Length: 426
Image (cartoon, rainbow, N blue to C red):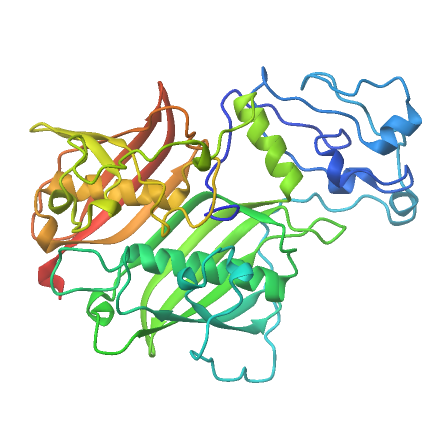
């Protein structure tokens, strides 16, 4: 997630920064004539940790203004109204989530190409081998169509004990994330430095038979719609991404996510607001499970895996009513940690939820994950243990759901509900 793909989101004890007050000086740094309040974003911070400073325009108008202030002390924009406000009157309030029906592009888009992957920078990946999107075409002002080649073999996405083998639900989730990011850069106008922070998402797969791995690489088509309203300066702050998945002409699933778009400075402000201190990096730590024979690691087969490198749970505990484990991924697993992170990315938590759900059913060889519904409340910090817990579920011949909670200390940082299906669906 992730840069992009990075989960999180609201801090506890939130406050709202009113319009016309500086929260992010990087987006409010022009001369006083600029309409500062247009660039302001409503963000929630823990009241005892947030730290703000006035923008350059404010500092010029008020040299004595503090360079840092608590959330209760903000510097008011020096002007009351802009010339545009006087001439045009009140402007509609920005909701950030208003749906706009984009006009269809009258020409028929060219056929999608599956011949080569797109530039890795478009999907925020360091390794070309981790890029699955091969083409992106505009359908309308806020709609794109993407081609994805699903690999026949992959060290992470193909490492499952279920038979027959199907394309991994997390591979389709990652493909949707990549298609959304690439489309936002190539056709929606987001700068490449923009981070996409996931607040919530939902993935439903209902064409399991169409996802059986065959003799040729899979060809997936993803139609993506961007739903949201830009600021008056044309920048997107938050919105919804809605996607439909197709194999040939058969729809096999759908994916939605609510996201926040931040530049690098804004992301750093948000991270500092939550922690109060700089966040450590994955490169600062030794791997959780550097030894393959780690006695605390969950047995791979019990969580649906063959390779210990792909196991993200340790110290599993089961009872007649519940299952729990610690989330301890290997940082040298480049499918989960393609580059350096300052938190556990969303995909790692979703993988942990899936493994705990399979552990809960007790039937990992005949159970397939076919859906996820997730909510992320905070970043999963690297320097504090992450605990996962779920009720014990038993397969009943149909699809079942396992709610998984993730905790750091006493605080719930994420909640992921995993939907599993029996092999009898194939």
